[in-house]
Length: 70
Image 1 (cartoon, one colour):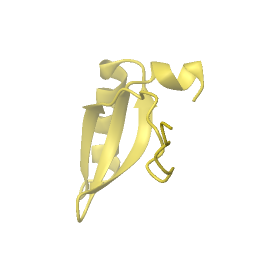
Image 2: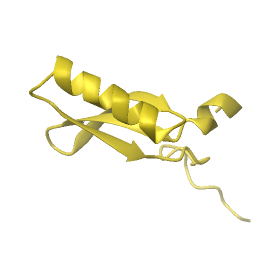
Image 3: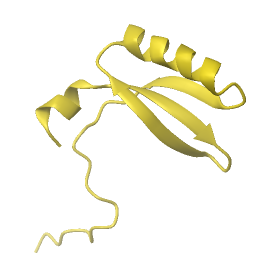
Image 4: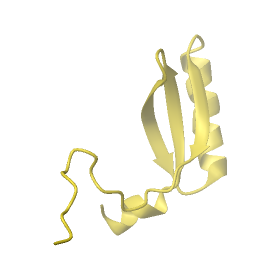
């Protein structure tokens, strides 16, 4: 993950059925994310779009096997 990607903590999310979600865009400020979400709601009125604070921390890949500590 690049330094630039770490700076974009505000995400515009489209909620899908079965608790799935799609990140539509990321922003550095909440005001920018809110403005983008408002415009998307106007363009796609029958979808659920939210703004979420989502810090991109260094997370291990869930598919990687656990490391052995021997």
